[in-house]
Image (cartoon, rainbow, N blue to C red; front, top):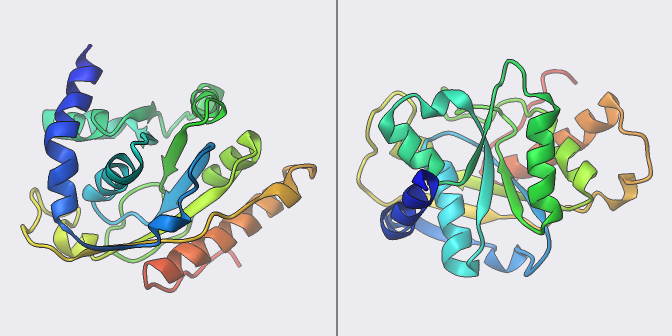
Length: 217
């Protein structure tokens, strides 16, 4: 019941409010019209997941479900933002199989899962090393990955500030879906997951106007 109330509030308030900060969106035609999808993006601000979710709601009437660390529910404002963003809580100390199963169920129902491979908001607005969870999930669900680059959200609402600057200036660039079909019959190894993740993050870097440096390579 509470989740439905939060989500209803998001439809009325958060979605139009978050899109007000957006100065431009490119690549809407790259979003598939049907089928499950794992959406990945860079993450510099509280507002990133709400903008991406709002974009899918407004233009495609689709819900993006997020995997989100449990700590984001620590106060009412955060709980409001993240529950209204249709999140699946994750214990980062013990992610476990249950979380992956919950996400896989959503994907197998034809839904969209949103992930930020960096794992948390960037402390400096720069693109940091991506984790392999998004690729692992997409391979398990046999669905494509959609890379998105979000520009200037750090300047609008960095993690060090309680409230955003009330001005437009965020740009969203949507890339083409990346099929992982050629990997479906291969054994899922750490090396393969890291290589695909690097390729995905390089694309996110291009879309967000940043250089991606994989320090493990």
